[in-house]
Amino acid sequence: MNGGKRHPVRGFFAGLFLGISIALFLIMAAVVALGDIVPIIVVVVFAVLGVVWALYGPSRGRGGTTKSETVSAGAGPAPGAGEPPK
Image (cartoon, rainbow, N blue to C red):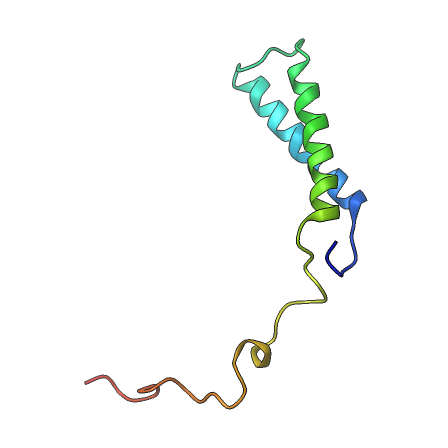
């Protein structure tokens, strides 16, 4: 696993809400019937995928990257930066 704090409960709810949304879309678009088992399967599959992604997917770490982390040390401005166009 990656080093970082994991949130499987958040992943479960994210997958659950995504699964419910996709199941409702499939029902409203008349792709599947309301009485079918397919919407329930879609919700369960996405809930499980949410937990799996929360446990094994890439972690965000602590905050975003700062400008000093993205620019290498000692790198100046790009050649021609700040010059007026010709």
